[in-house]
Amino acid sequence: MNAIWRVFRKEFRENLRDRRSLIASLVIGPLLMPGLLAAALSIAIHHGGRESRHPVRLAVAHSRRAPNLLAFLRQFEVRLEPVKTSRAAARHWVRSRHEPLLYVPRDFGARLAAGRPASLRLYADESDRASQEVVGRVGRVIGLYGGAVARLRLMARGLDPLLLTPIVVHPIDISTPQSRSVLALGMLSYVILLTMLMGGLYVAIDATAGERERGSLEPLLTVPVEREQLVYGKMLAASAMMLLSLTLTVTAFALTLTHVGLDRLGMSVKFDAGVVATIVLYSLPLIPLGAALMTLVASFTRSYREAQTYVPLVLLIPTLPLMFASILGLRPSPALMAVPFLGQHFLIMSVLRGQPLPAVYAALSVGVSLLPGVALVWLAGRLYRREGLLG
Amino acid sequence: MIEARALVKRFGSVTAVDGVTLCAPDARITGLLGPNGAGKSTTLRMLYTVLAPDGGEAWIDGASVVREPIEARRRMGVLPHGAGLYPNLTARENILYFASLHGLPRGEARARARQLIGQLEMEEFADRAAKGFSQGQRLKTALARALIHRPRNVLLDEPTNGLDVMAVRTLRRLLRQLREQGHCILLSSHVMQEVTALCDAVIVIAHGRVIAMGAPDELRARAGAESLEEAFVRLIGLEGPESLS
Image (cartoon, rainbow over all chains, first blue to last red; front, side, top):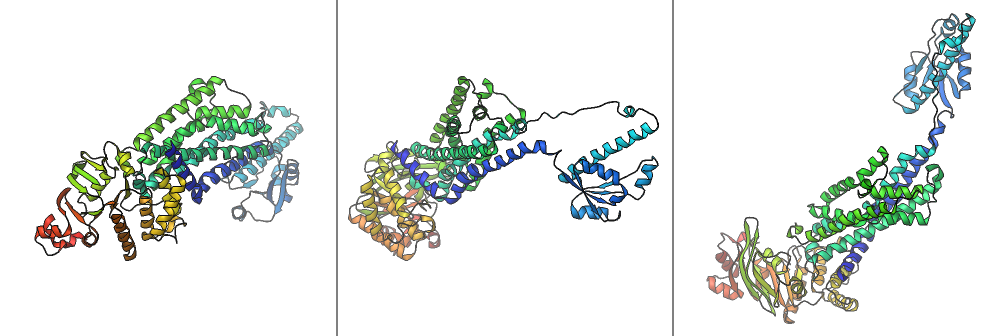
């Protein structure tokens, strides 16, 4: 037992001294990811109501040729900017300025007055998302204007303008900030759990593949300590880094999300220290599983580089269900709670939404996470007895 | 004292060590001499319990490396081939880590580390991170690490490989000191001069078998050769001396 503690202390201390590892496990994951996700959430919340209201800009060539149409456009928050360009140069103008251009041909007024189709040319690069939005808006407004003109023409000929509108569809947007942020919020548990795993990644690799590559494994195996205890100590160090990384990440989320505005995200609880502690507590049972998994995979690789390739790849497998959970909108059920990582996802979401799950669900999740964890820890210990370990 | 009886080790279909029996007494420097791939390192690795023998037995001061490996490890200090350090720890911390794993009380470990650092002339770099150490500095640190628990038996695998003259001298002086204090020292080498200069007894290994053993002079006499080098070549039946170093 003492030896495990000594190995742990040394591995943990050495890891804290390694700048590269510290940045990877305690800065990029716990600080950068919550920041990015908060930004994504913030966009999701504010984006919805924005589209129809905020004005768009539209460059117009020969605006004098269509004064009524342009006045109509202005009413719908289209800011017109008269420019001078010939029809031949219009394409070039759009390409160089990256914004759409409405070109009013010389005969526009005359054809309109004569009751014949009058054409407008709307130049735009439709592969550009901002241009797409402008084209859509402008197209709709011009369509409205055309409809109004058509009705006036019918009325002038003594016909009922309603003949032109046999069907009316009313799209009603009921999206709320909460529903718009569902996907991004589902990412939260994914980020928390993946960052937790990543926190232990470096120690797990360094203590196994790294130790062998440096040639310090063989001397280590000559000390009067059972080999299992050595690897237990190493896994304990990885676990400690994971715990550190997990706590930091959840705390960072608490700070950034409170800033974004929790009520809009559909979180009915305050993201306070109690919630942070609960999320950490629910994620805790995954730590032995993660540490042992990474240590096992890294022990099988032949070199440090190989371990750096394979271990993160293996970590994708248990965390992949989380991606699908939020995309497919899965609801917690006993069967799903019994999937490690997925169960934690539901628990974390329930804490954030303030809708507690049955205690049985929590117990189930803890059990199915701890059990394979303990089994893998034992397996990693057995593996360290193999001679092949020396490579 | 280190004793081995009929040690066998196979890797797949290759028999690396094929019935090695040897004895390295206390207060002697015993050399395992043989060309590369003769089975020296594999023999040593079985003795210091990193590999388990497929046959035979070995004892470190009477503790069986097969049945009580932990007890055997307590009784020896090991300098494996190319012994690596922890780059983010200082030399002193590297040494103290092994002291703690050997179960030395902290105060005693510190005092012993200080003593070894003085003895091996390591003061200059003792508290620097091991990251940029030279070959010689690495060897000294690894040696101090191997000796921290005052082992009666010291095993060294090709200790002089890649060292400069000064470092080799320090090492030889230290090994002679240990011999005078009554320690049992067993080292492997493929360099003739090394063994002649240092060892009291030589065990010649080739193709996984012990071919001859005895004092350097005895071996010379037995092979009827002028120099130990010539004796060595005749004993192991090599074509020319160039394959030795």
